[in-house]
Image 1: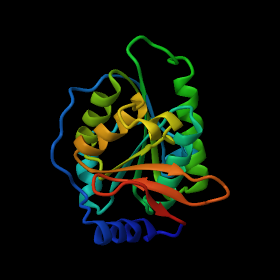
Image 2: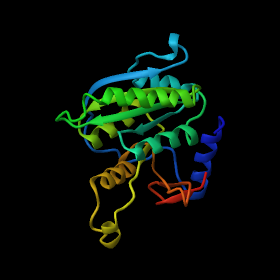
Image 3: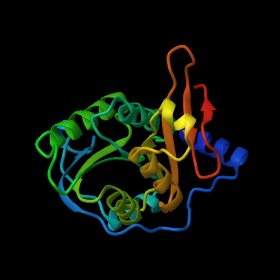
Length: 221
């Protein structure tokens, strides 16, 4: 998607559904322990470098008219689809795309996490070299870590993958997976516009996008 189309999409979504870029009601505890970060930048030799981000960088990017799009990633296909959707539909030239991989405290997946973050970051930079890409791997409670990083880095947009509800969930609305609960809590509590994205099947096409104001908005593109 060409530069500027991300802003057009957000304006279109805002005008049709009453959305706003910033939301109130942050909550949910503090962040976790950072295990590593990497940034891919065309300003550095070889196109790669390490960087930690932070409020100073967030303020500088805001003053330059650039936004930070944060995507929660893991090893699922849904998370990869959400990442690529954010890269092509939300991020513009010069924007920051932050890939956040949150690990549980007990260390499951800690060895594979840097490799996963590295491969996803490399993929994003290869697809859109004009977007500044960084990957953060942090160990801690998932909801609290996501909310605290959104606040700390002053993200403009948070993107998560949403899973397809199971047949049982359709029959009994009281049954919800932990993933669905996390998405709903992020939508309601994050201090920025939060979008939950799910790619439709090949026969249908497009994406389903959920926000605080509208659920499963069908986006064909």
